[in-house]
Length: 107
Image 1 (cartoon, rainbow, N blue to C red):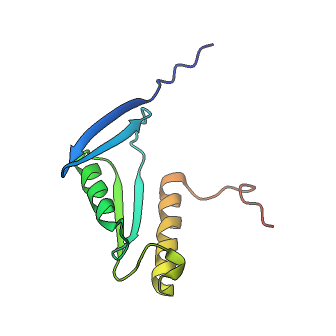
Image 2: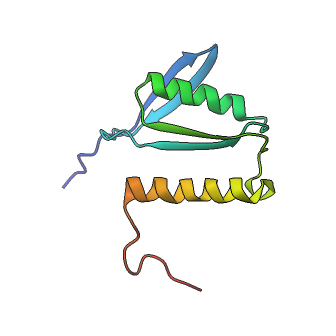
């Protein structure tokens, strides 16, 4: 039996003079994205542009910004790093559900 899953389609669009490319795998649910950035990260402005572009495309996206923080989370203040980690856990649980028995093997 042949696989009826459609192949990916390539798309390009422009936002704020930035050419953006993405591949759509046909996910009708529009996979959500969580962006976490410190505002001192050199890539922060690119994250803002990506966030704005995805919002215009009506994609589910969240941007968590941490003031005064740079690129590397383990160099952040402890409260900000803990908050970012909790956001990631909450995001995964919201979109994938809680872990099921046997999915995590402790060392």
